[in-house]
Structure formats: C-alpha cells, structure tokens
Length: 330
Ligand SMILES: Nc1ncnc2c1ncn2[C@@H]1O[C@H](COP(=O)(O)OP(=O)(O)OP(=O)(O)O)[C@@H](O)[C@H]1O
Image (cartoon, rainbow, N blue to C red; front, side):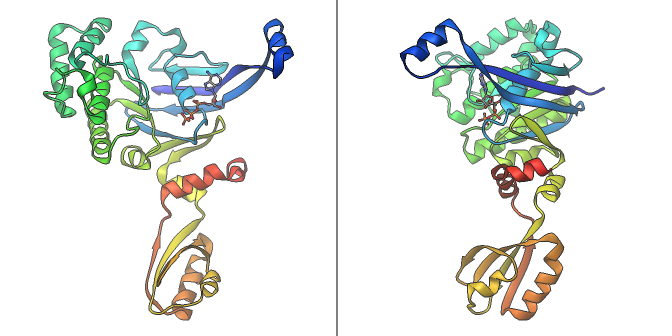
C-alpha cells in the first residue's frame, strides 16, 4: 500500500482584491471581491513506504502548499489525499504520531531554553514514556553528533547545530513519514552534508518515507533517486533523476582544450558556445548531432583534449523553469 497518495489534488487560495484610493477601501469593506490563486492544480502521485523523493520547483511553484496539504495544516480545495492510511486534514492523533513537518525557515525550539527542555514538551505531547524518551534522545543525538550541545540555550548553538536539534525534536515521536521543507536552508557545506548523511541513515534505520524540498541540488542528488517537479502548481515531472536529464536536456556539454587560438565563429559552427576563455571552451550540442559534430571538431579544429559531459542538473532545471514553453510542451 502506498504511504502517500494524492489524486487530482488542488488548492486555491482566495485573495481579496482591493481597488486603490478611498472609494476602493470603502468598497473593500462593503463588498469584498476575491481572486483565486491556484497554488496547486490537479496534482496526482504516489509514494511507497521507505522512498526518499525530492520535490523541485521554482519559488512560488506550490511546494510548501503541497507539504502543508500532506501534513493536514490546510484543507484541499479538490481531490483526494491519503497519508499513512489517514486523510491528513482530519488531524487525527494516530496520524499526527506518524508524520512530521520540518520547515527550514520556522523553528519549534524555544530560543532561551536548552533544546533538551523543549524535547520534554514534545515527549509529553506525544506521550513518549521516560525510558523510551531517554533512549531516543541518546540515539538521535549520537546520529546527529549533538552530544554535549543540548543543555545550553538554543540561542548559543550554531545554525547547523540548531537545525540538527530541530530535526531531533521533530523526530522524537519516530514518525514514519517526513515532510522536509528546505531542511538545509542557509547551512554551510559541512552542516549540509551532516544533515544529508543523517537523513540517509534515518531512512535506512527506520524505513521512513521522506519527501523533501531543497534549493541545493546536492541534497536532492545525494538523497533522492526519484523527483517530483512542480511548476505553477502543476506536476510536470515524476520519475528518476536520470530521466529528468533525458527529458529536459536534449543536449550534451562538450569541453575542449585547443592547441592554438581560433576565431570564435569557427567554434560556433559546432554548437552553442557557453564559455570561452583562452584556449578552453564549453559548447552545448544537441544529442542527436553529437557524434557527427565531435568527429568534425576533431578533424577540423586544433584540439588537444575533448570531453563530453552531462549538463549540470542545476543548469537543466534552471532552463526548464526559465522557459515555460518546455513545461507546456511536455
Ligand atoms: N496563504 C496564502 N494565501 C494566498 N496565496 C498563497 C498563500 N500561500 C501561498 N500562496 C501562493 O500560492 C503559490 C504557491 O506558494 P507556495 O508557498 O506553495 O510555493 P513554493 O513552491 O513553496 O515556493 P518557495 O520555494 O518560494 O517557498 C504562490 O503564488 C503563493 O503566493
């Protein structure tokens, strides 16, 4: 049975319209007019137990709205939703014990108290027995390398330590389903790696299902074999990371090192020149033209070295988001 199932899920937010000026304000109070913001439109997907899925999309695409729907914080405008066997918006106790929602830009720990004190509040809310509570705090703080950090006020922790303590708090009730919205936001590279490794280990140990958004592609490539991509509220891709490149990057990058300088327009006959510095250049060549162009380049240009690479996934995604035609044609 799927752990998460969304069928034709939609969420529309009513936004009150106000005309400018005094008359507009008066009208606004007497008879409000609304416009619908279609944050999520007819989205369907299923996620199996133990899967780690990346959720990609540009700002305002509808990722946070979807995570809020999945965790029952908001009610869907249309469609069906089932998470861990429950309808999230009912917010049943049994459901809340099975899930967690972590938002990188919101915190639940109390600033002036040690994290250990905030954990006690969570233990009480989730009715975790004392012995079990101690065991879980010890296990998670070891996995997160947080030992010795939990008895000082949260405000004295570094950003990375604070995020790790937030994760610990969010996982004390040992949820099966984790919704993570930018869990590495603003962290330095070392802390990002630590959080990633922790999530991998947590998923392996407890077979937790994880849906996560991140602006750092490294999080997605390290953790997720599958990605969902959302754009203007619509799901435009559901599949493997590899397939994402196949589908949205119909080109390869050719890196060349020249033996002597040539005119740029000579190079432009072979593909779109993306970088050009001294004797090094980088070109985009359509996949179907690749063999032919590369062999011509080797014949016709003074090439010392040539390498064909997959385009960087960030670049591919950036192009998809920047070019709505790619999205609507897909
Ligand atoms: N409470 C709300 N009322 C009205 N509109 C909203 C509300 N919350 C979100 N929206 C709108 O819904 C759309 C989707 O927003 P959402 O926060 O889900 O996007 P997102 O993909 O999480 O973006 P980001 O990466 O910037 O966080 C946006 O156009 C946003 O302005």
